[in-house]
Image (cartoon, rainbow, N blue to C red; front, side, top):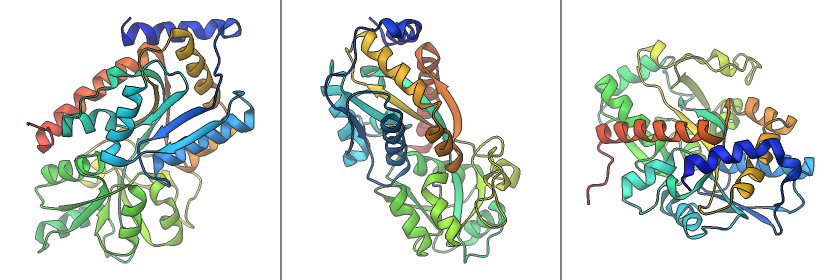
Length: 328
């Protein structure tokens, strides 16, 4: 049975969850393909807390971080766990990017899509001591900087790197990208002035923004973020202008979703679709979305599969233009 058919059946089975014959019989492991403290880790632990507080499953939830090989270790773990309904992986765009960039013999089509929980924005952040007030200020400085200005982010040939290169191509600048093990280390390096900018998610920079160590110049989205509650004394997420409105015509949002291994049953898949749909309605999850300026976007079944198919196509196109596709 194909992924799309299984996904559609999973959603249909939500209408009969009261009659489901399957539920977990041992602890559930959520694998995070990044280090502790990053945005993916925060999402997994928010889900863990919401499930436990709401007593949504009888079994405990265990978070396991496997950041090696740009998330490849975690993806191979799930691939090798085919048929195991007690394992999940929290994913981002790396689910396409890592295989495309490394020829890792794994694909999201080897997994069972469960649910997309949200989309995540990326922001151009700079050290607060820098004189840049707008994204255009940063770009103008980058055009004349010698040596080139440095950006940093999560790994090589991943989302942050892709945005940095796409920004170079769109603005005719030369920028040096420095890869780190995750958004957390990139945030520390920016706050310390060791790099000139990063493209972190809101969750990864909110603490340093509040402390006054960094400041946002623009969000790589087609429209401003919707959250109007003040984060600092004078700014809310909604006050950050879009990068296109600042003359940087680059937009990028990243999926945040959940997958199971392949070869699970439709009933097992349906159990988790129902579980994450319940999580998406909890106060803890809604507070997490607002706190981290995530774009609410729950999808399951064929809607999620269609999104994945198109999003993979977009990433392959962007990565080809950036020269990120592995050729041997």
